[in-house]
Image (cartoon, rainbow, N blue to C red; front, top):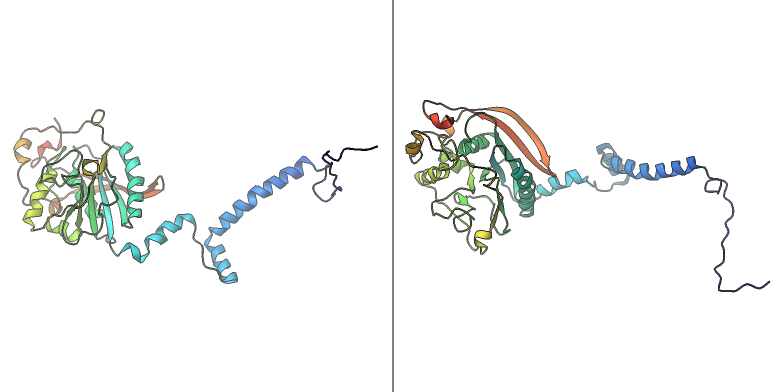
Length: 318
């Protein structure tokens, strides 16, 4: 009988009784799948083990390949990142939506610019009104000896222009969110939003005043402290993105600011606090927790501020 040569021949295999025969049981197939899944996982686990790495180096003299969790820290130790390290201070209370966006965004932004940094979220947990200035003072005190400059940074302000300089402000305080760039505040004495200072310069100002309970005015008072300390204020140059330099993620429609002025607070808010600051700061650390938000490390310092109601009765709303 003749067959067409166009037909695809049927291939036959000799039976292999050792493993993959047609008589192979479901149990054997399951075992094979299990091995194929577990072996790569086991290898990955062992490759991240310090003991395994040491054994590999000793046996084969190959360089150590760090696990992904260690790579970022090793890269940040490169000399190209410079000798300085910034403490990014975020005064905070109950603004979790902004925080979940801010921490990973800023961590990636600063890493791209090769800025060594630690992010501190200074979380006010007492029953008093919000005190941004005191929380920044607390952040300064709690930032440790391994950082040599600070960034006073609002949690709702994200830099969009990579040309912005977050480097060490050795010449003097550097106001990143300048009036020409901030999307909301444009008066020439404004120093809020994002301000960099060396720790020495911050101490020269005795920090910020602790008298400002509620929202606003503490930055204006700090501007006068900078002038009194004889510090020259610097701002960005050559930034062409104007009011689109930052993204402001605060929504006043659903998160109202505490702008109420009560009793003598209306008169006191424009005065210079000649004695207060780091020297009369009173607080208690309730907890300190290191965690990551979408892979970005930060330290949450929960604090209770103290208020002398004889001096500032407006720390409570009646």
